[in-house]
Structure formats: C-alpha cells, structure tokens
Amino acid sequence: PANNGGSTITGYTVTSIPAGGVDLNAGSTSLTHSISGLTNGTSYTFNVKATNSAGTSIFSSLSNAVIPNASINISYLKDGLIETSLSEVINKEPVRIDIFPNPSKGRISIRFSSQPNIGGRIDILDVSGRKVASRIITGISEEFNLDHEAPGLYLVKSFLGSDLIIQKLIITK
Image 1 (cartoon, one colour):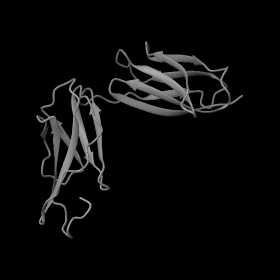
Image 2 (cartoon, helix red, strand yellow; image 1 turned 60 degrees about the vertical axis):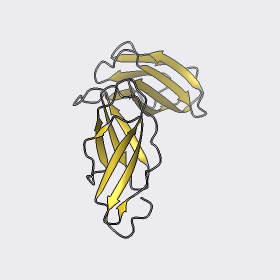
Image 3 (spheres, helix red, strand yellow; image 1 turned 90 degrees about the horizontal axis):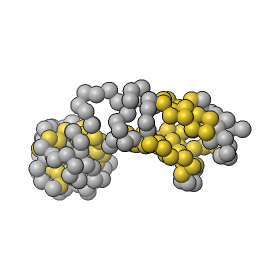
Image 4 (tube, one colour; image 1 turned 90 degrees about the vertical axis):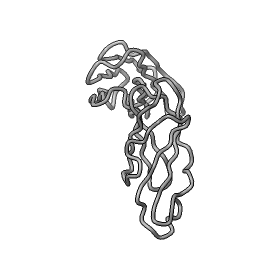
C-alpha cells in the first residue's frame, strides 16, 4: 500500500478478475505469487491487497490483461505496480535468441536455442516504430536482408507464444 501505517507488511493476496484463480502464496510476503485454477484462453487481470497489523489495504490498481496457456506468475512491486508473466510449459527452459552479426552491415541471422512454437513471429522496427521486416518463424534460424535500411538502431521483436522478447540490432554501413 502507499501508506503502511508504520507497520511491516505481513502478507499479500492476489485476486483474479474474473474470479476463479487461487493464489497459491496467499498471505505470504513473497513479491511473486503463482495463481492456479485459471482457464486457458480466458483474459484475466489481477489486483493485490496487503495486510499488516493495522489491517488490510484496499485493492491495488489492476494489472495488464493476460491470457494464460499454462501458469501465471504475479509480482507485486514495492512501488504499487503489478507485473504479470506467463509460463507456457512449467519447468521448460526459456528460448534464447542470438542475433548475429550484431552490429551488422544489413544481413543478419536470428538463431533460437530450441525450435519455437508454431505461430511465432519476428518483427524488425526502426527507432520510429516503423516495421521494416516481418516473418513467421518456420525454423530454428531465420535470415534477414536489411541492406536497404539506413544505418542505425533497430528493435527485433520475437513473439514466441505468450512471450515477447525485444533485442537491439545495430546496422552499420
């Protein structure tokens, strides 16, 4: 809460909207809580209440909406914000992405540490947000020819299921 009344927080509880999610860490002081009982494909938002010897706070503001595929982790940040993240497969190591060469003269390879799920996409944007290239991921490595693009900083956005990974790319001439 914005004001804890001078008492230490003794626990946080996360509530899902719509109802149905169960906070597996309810009442703990952990800043990351796991929620079970959600329906895959349903959009959820979350809010948090804090408890201490002075009582229970009002609900925090709502988190961003998420649509689970397997599990959701909720982190309550000390500044009152809520951060959500999805895990498509529990205990699966995240996919690493390498862009090389970086810096590049325009021709790049984007390599994944393991085959991404079907339906993943890569977008490359210039610093103004203009999409200069886009492609559905079909393999463990994707090649792009950006020779026609001006030198500068670009963002490589990899959409992998419910995860979005953004990396910097520098094009030189």
